[in-house]
Structure formats: structure tokens, C-alpha cells
Image 1 (cartoon, rainbow, N blue to C red):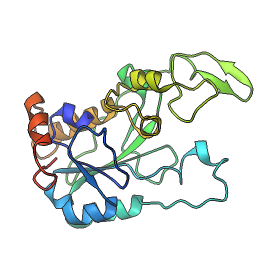
Image 2: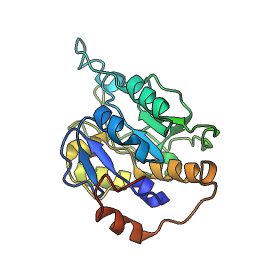
Image 3: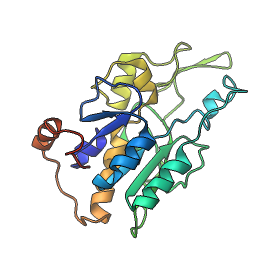
Length: 227
């Protein structure tokens, strides 16, 4: 959604059906789809599974093995010469060209995320100032309840945000599926990245998004659409 707000036509890819996804959608393995289609796009955004890296699951997932798709996705984009963005959680093995936080955009989540930007021949995007958090994340931590201005948009129980609160906190309206909300990043993040790419990338100038472009994109097949 953020890239669309920045002015892009968007095509989504996931191995799991996402019927609430508001743009053209390709069901399939991300690496296979990248092999087949990535040259059709100006920019590829990859959000590989984070379980191998996130601190939130290091205890509960101890002893389990999770695939790390980051190297393969980076290699594919480099091979095909396509500009890319790889997003993941703190602790992931990516360059931290950009770090974004919900407080930078006045949101109700902190949700720190790192972004590696492989914009060929172009400087990384400008890093916004990391503003001081206004308080804690609401919920129970180690037997202590803290009431704060931010929602915990992951897991269930323990004072974490419910679906409606997560939607509001992240400015996401197109899905009410708990799992999708816990895995999502706020569209403000990708809108910022998209605007930075347009300003400094191959097009060289920011342009205002046209609402009619979304309607046109929805009427096209994934093979015809291009980000």
C-alpha cells in the first residue's frame, strides 16, 4: 500500500493466498516468481521470513531451524540487475541502509525495521531522525504491566493489541486477519522508501500518486503490471 501511495503500480507475491490483498497478486514461491518476473519491474521489495532472526522467537523457537532467504533474494536481484529493497527485523543479516520506526510517522507502534536498498548506482535513501519514544509498549513484560502509547502488534494476550487496535496503530485497513497484521509493516514505511526511490532513482523527480492508477492496476494481469 505504501508504494502505491508513493505512485507505483504494485504486484504482490506470497506462497499463501491473501484474498484481502488490494492489488494484483501472484500465488507462488517468491524465489520462483523472482526468477520469472523480476526483470519486469523497476523495483523489487522483499520481506523474507524473519523467524531466523527475530529476538521475539529465539526462546520459543529454540531448536527449530528456519530457512534464510535473504542471500538468495539479493543474489537474484543482482544477477538480473534490478533495484531492490530487502526488509527485515533487527538482527537480520542485511545492510542497515535505512532504519524506520513508527514514531517517525506518528504511528501507534514502534515496530523497528531495517532496510537494505540495492539501488544500482544511487545513494541510499535519507535516514530520518530516530525520534525519542513517547513511552513503553502497552502490555505485560516479565510480570509487570506497563501502560504506554504504543500497541504490541505481535502475538496474542498479555495486553497486546487486538485486531482493531493494530489496524489503527499501523494505518492498515485492507485486512482484519490477525496473522497478516502481525507480519505487516506500516505502509508509511514503504511510502517513504518509494518516494525516496522516485526522487533519487532512475526517474529523478517526485511525482504525485494518481488514484486512477490503482484502478487501472487492478484491471491488469500480473504479467502486464510493473512496479
